[in-house]
Length: 594
Picture 1 (tube, one colour):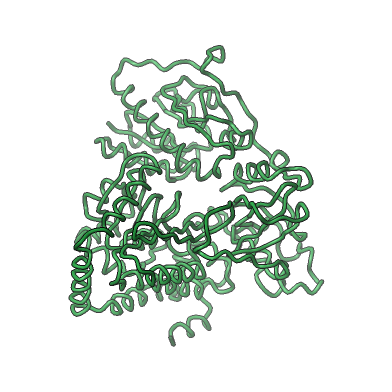
Picture 2 (spheres, one colour):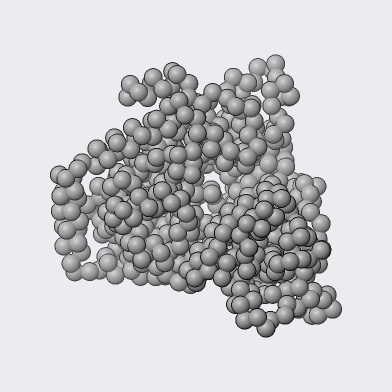
């Protein structure tokens, strides 16, 4: 069947639906619904049998839904209407939520219902973006596949929305405003503070004031031990800040300076603030680690160190954690949106080196619930005084991490891919000896869509070794999302685990423990070492790295600004400020001399 996707962005949900429908033999064409005319043109050209809108922020033109069945994927229970469905569900502490697949009609979200699937929510739900990438996506997949099957049957008639039916529990809700989201630090308990921030994460954030700066808050985590005067910033750790509440404290990992706080409007202008000579104005409108936004204003805040081996006996903010069980070292890392800055790459490398020094035989790399990794940190790069130079530092740092994993001969290394992965973050997983992926993950192991970026992370060694040279080039040039089942079929992944996150974790831990207990583990390590020696003789790893970095140097410092423009477009969501110099000559000369 010919299916047309009309979507505001080809995000994780639309990519997952594309994969699921394509694997079932459907032909799916994706159109970015930038305007009503764009949708009309796409439908006229494609002549689809069915239209699906996985994520649409604007109304489908009447000329489309009058002539075609157009299914809207709405992230709410039956009867729920409005653009802030998940925001209200998280803020209000709903116990159950869901996804409804309904038919486009004159009234937004009020068309007849084709399918609806619900899921439980904890007392304090995860961040909106995380909820969307996990529970919402799984419910949406079930709902869309059900609706497509009903459509193909030809005999199903969708159920009109009827608020008198007991199962229709939703209602029309308005757009949530910043006034609705506002935190009262003198009254709101930690639960409510976390709910408010998570209901606005990853967008639009909660507008607040820290040290006199108008900022949006993101990345909320509970803190059970630290306390202080409500509203005060009482600690910092790995880029995050800890802010006291009336009954405890919460960590806030990321901030975004309100966009209008720019040169000429800075309230600190002329006051001698050192930020005026640093990154204050350029970082407005970019989501960054909290201490990077605050800069010298946070220098007096005490550092709260939490070692990677610290016991997990209380709630707090931690990006990297290491535990041992059954002869296995489990190294968990969870970076916001999967992006890994230069500093984060080196912290993870140091943690890996510690894990490698331990008397275990297996190391498991557990990526985050939402993302295993998405490679270099484009936001931090964009906010740097010299983005080209910071791009170089970041790619060198992640290459250093991959190099250490590749050269680990003392342990069997397993990558546990429980969340999506992209670009160098997907290649990072291949540095391990074995890749186990959750069945629901979406992989985008390519770089070219970021302004023709060539890529590094030793992909020219790792990817062909797993999938063959021809398939490796196809993966890189195709720039399309890959599902876990396809990844296993072509050799990108070794094992795919169906089911929920808990089932995946149990499977990975059992597999790792079994490997550690194997009597022939020493033979496995010997064979691994011999393969690495043979490969090194054929072509040294250093040569792969040098070749990749020579191409990346051209991307970063060469005359073509395509990468820099693509990065700006990504960071600013297509609303980039006035262009600035991308590859200062001094930086180019410094790197060329290295």
